[in-house]
Length: 221
Image (cartoon, rainbow, N blue to C red; front, side, top):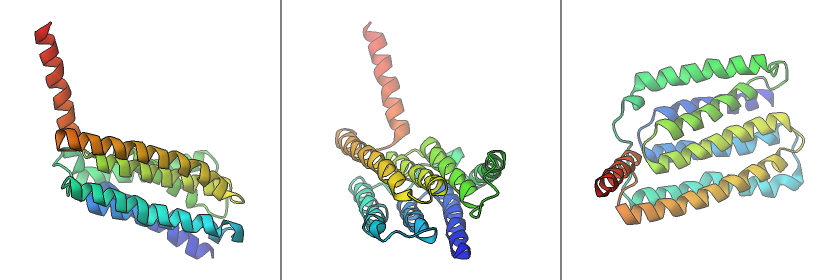
């Protein structure tokens, strides 16, 4: 059982690298869906509660199908296929970021004295996933990619919650999932209205628009 669990954790860690390095928005959504499904399955390898089976199925449905379907529909509607070319998305730089996050996560796990338990890979894997989500939000330029970053961040928080509350992981996830669902709903509505108004979802272009508005306002004054 522990071997299967560690294989799932290693899969999540590798998916973090692909999430950070890919420039395809569709692949980004797909990898996040895979990661969410794997994370949802992990509590069953600790102590399975039959009463939580329905919640696990709902969790897999949301993370593996509903959220990805909504994001893919938005990407198709606004023809968002790839990230814009950026120095922050080069293979060398993303590899350096991932290696840094990898060693930092194991260092934090060691310093917090989480390395002596039976699932020693889960804590650093959780930190890696959390940091990956934050980095996606920071370095990706498409708003849809940043929404995926929030999903990845939630996956990492959930994995950490599983390690800290093994007996009741679904209680932890219920609270976290409610927050992320509301956040995705709000961001989805914002993306829809931004795309409808400006016909694009490029963060850099929105920054340029803000600068242009400030210049116009300064001239009027």
